[in-house]
Length: 108
Image (cartoon, rainbow, N blue to C red; front, side):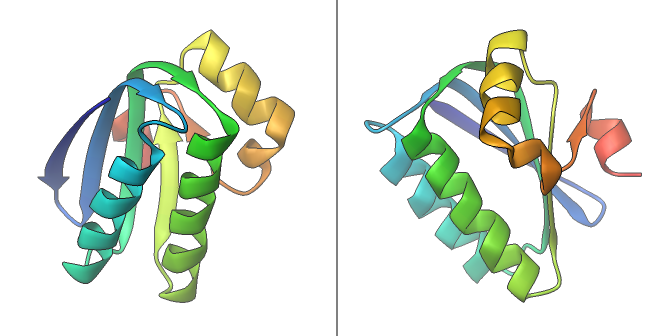
C-alpha cells in the first residue's frame, strides 16, 4: 500500500494505492492517528490507485469516520474503481461516507 497526502485549503487529500487489507490496515490506522493528532479535520480519501479493499480496510476507514464525526470533521472518498465501489456499496459505506467522482468535487 502506498499513501500520499497533500494539503489543499482546509482539506487533507490522501491518495491510497495498492491494497488496503489485513496486512496494510495497521499502517493506514497509524497514519490516520497522526492526521488526527496534527489537527486534520476534513479528509478526502482519493482511491483511484486502490486495487482492493477488504473488511479490515473498511474497519479502519470506519474508525476514522467515527473519530472525525466526533470532532465535527468530515470524511469523503473519491475516484473509486468499479471493484472498490462495489465493495463500498455492498457494505453500505456509501450511505454515511459520501462518494465523489474526484477530489475537487469532494472539496466543494
